[in-house]
Structures are given as C-alpha cells and as structure tokens.
Image (cartoon, rainbow, N blue to C red; front, top):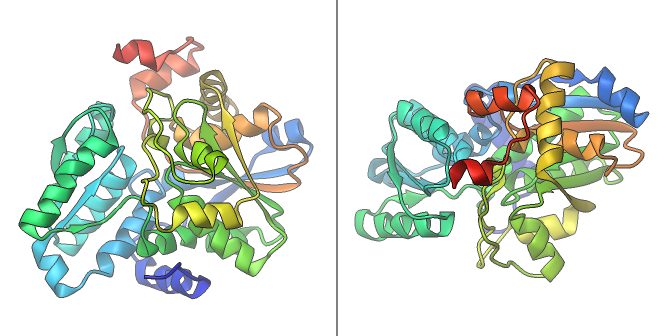
Length: 330
C-alpha cells in the first residue's frame, strides 16, 4: 500500500460517518487571552470511546475483507486504540484480541474488556506485547490492525482534520498530540492538502517521546517506555515504520515536548478553566500553549485527543497534588 491521500481521507469520512461522533470545537477564552490568539479546542474527548482512536479503528475494521472478518483481528495498544478497536469490532461482529503491556493503567484495561475484547497483558512494553500479536497472526491467521502505521488508520484519523477545517476554515495553527504519528499524519495530510500554509505542531511528553527522538535521529529509533501522565503517548513508532515517520517528516512543521509538571498544569487548567475532564495525552496541546512553547498561535485549534484518565489520579491533579506516576507505579 502507498501513502494515503486526501481522497482516502474523504472516503474514510463516508465509511465511518454513521459510526462516530462529529465532535464539537469550542472557543477557549482563557487560552485566547493568555496567548493573545484565537484558540479553539477540538473535543475528541467527547468521542464515543473517549478518544479519537475510534476513527481509525472503525475505518480499518470496516475495510476488512470477508476472510479477514471471519478470522478476527488483533492489536497492540496503550489503551485508547484497543478501546476503539474493541468497540468497532463488536459493532461489526468481528472477534477481537487486544495485547497490552503491564504499564497500561487498569482503568483502560477494564474499559477494553467491557467492550467484549479478549485482553492479554504481556511484558513491560508495547514491543513485548507485539510478540503475542505476531504469534496470533501466524498461528490463528488473525489480521493485525496496528495503532497508527497503516493507511486505513491514518485515513480514519485524518477525518478529524477535515472536521477542523469545516468548523474553523480560518485556522492558521493546529496543535496535535504525537505518539506513533497516526493522528498527526492524517490530520496534517488533510489540512495541508486543503490549505498548504497551515502550521502543524506536534506535542509529546519529555519522557519517552519516540517520534520526537526518531525525527531528531533522522530514522526510527527505540526509546525506553517510562511512566508518564501522558500514558497514551507511550510506545515506539516501530523500527520498520512504513508511513508515519515519513509523513511527519514531510508534513509537520515542528515537534515539541512538555514536562510532567506542564502536563499536570494543563489537566488542572482544563478542569478549572475549561470545565473539561481530559487525560494527560489530551492535555499536551494546552501544556504547550500555557508554557509559551507555541509563539504567535493566531487562529489556533488544539486537538483534545481523549478523556480516558483514572479519575482518582485526576482528582489528585486538580486538587493541586504534585503527582509523580513513576513513584506511584514503583
């Protein structure tokens, strides 16, 4: 398969339209004041499974052949991809196995099990969980649906870019959380094809930012997975990455990282100033703006990518506790 195109994203929009929410975009007066810009929040935290991942997962499941559907699908996930995949598979009556590392928070594991998927916890990283995925593909002839590096996934996530342009055509800067790069690749492809001068900025956490380190190295590299408030952004991009590394290199204007303290501050801001409950990964765009790392954003859209945070952890953060998730898990 070649790199996805704008036509693939438009096709995906038709394919998944009745299965997902067209999420609202909300102006943020507090962030607009702080940045002297015009900031809007694209609320994928209100997506059906609490995350944008449902878009790509649904597009991939609905694009399966009859033979693939009968054998079932398998995926590796830090949480949100697995939840989206499990939900899409259940709706399509397709068997689904999700393999996860021990670092995935228990609330995300339980949410996937609640969708009827067979959840398998293996090892201390996505790479170790991937070994079980590979075994199921080989032995059971299941189809692997990867979390990001696949044209159907990228095209599905790209529908978010189409929605942003429909909702705020004057947008100048779009800030997107980055992990494996499926969301930012699809979003950037949609927006830059329509409006080439748009600025696309990707944000990761300082701890274990695989795409950031890979782009710096000029090739996909492995990074250690470290406990972080932005747990959904954990995991590597794959040393044999076929799509998202190159798309990020070609389409994304800048990649930046934010600290754990800045992520916590953003979760705190979202709750008290925007009345939003969002997870760490979903808050990194807010963190980037609050910390002054996106100068002159102008008409700016932040992708709030998900809401799937452990609520006890969320309460500690909004109460102002200095949370260290590495110590929590140690």
